[in-house]
Image 1 (cartoon, helix red, strand yellow):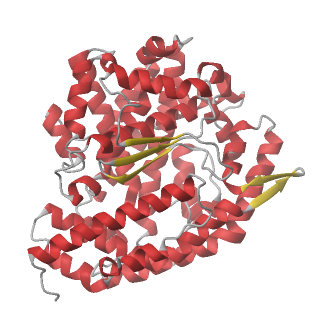
Image 2 (cartoon, one colour):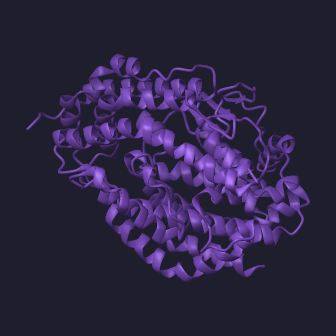
Length: 497
């Protein structure tokens, strides 16, 4: 049994973790912003070698003693230990995704643009060929690396004293079993709702019903091209700026927020946030494409940006950097879902048929929540399986059951969120639904235009990642976090049409 560490040693490791995360976030920013082709994780792990050593993780585990900050640092060390073993595979996967290309009908398309191409392509047969090209590249170049990484994690988790990856995260306090039960209930309770609303949605957007839909049709459906005129690329940032201004936030005037708006060939087309120094340097990266999905992504990442930029600098690294990520995801979703709020649409965009669009947005949310509920159930099986190579059919079965659209079996390895992040998204959707209901009740349906609401948000953002999502919700509303609240939010939007 390893000996517990003294407070001085723990403080040193905490400060080192702060620098480790900053370097990882900066490397992520440089690579995905198109400023650097390579994705050099291994040198960062080498510079912070002690944090990724088995003895460190075990000693931190022996030091927890009910202290949450110590538990977060222990979790980080365990993740660093596992991450160190797979950093080379992660680097290689990222570099392949940045450099691989496919030729479809004589046109060369980069791997990272294949999914966006599915959304922009009107011809269904061409979409099928683009999807086939993506699957072929995944199977030929990525799956072996993904399998190697998963098998290493499975093996090394036992060195950390846990029977499997799921048990390790249970020991970190993740409510996986309670959440899995909520997922099963949600899937059962919204089955008929999804079949009815999903069929109506796809017929409206594509002219085909849920039973005829193929996975290569999904990107086009989510793209919502018929709504593009209402979501122009040039209006994205101004709409965000005005929305934040009404809450009392001057985006351009925030000295600790950087906006990366430059065009670069290898820049990820999706907006993202890199909280390199929390709260001193938070980078919001965007490459405006326009369309409803692009707007949603920008507002989501702006939610992360404002949360990290307003985090109190006096908090510990564990409270600023680590903690329950359902909190920051909940804040991201609160801003993201303004783009499907009929009151915001009418006020900010002079929007045609806002309740119709809001109902479509609620249907997309229902798809996502059902899909992630199935993903969590799949990941719980994945991380306790003896033979990972046999799980392709189970992945297809669970995801098909939830969405009624068969996924690509080659994604059974790549569609796994590290650190059970699917559970964080699910809890964040619940947090957003319940916080939104509270804000509407306290400040009115146009809560986003009230300075008082902005003051409350800034006060809560200042707490960083110190409270869990459950504690944050209880502090604000007195309620318990419930996934069923998301279904209630969706039913409300669908009933308003």
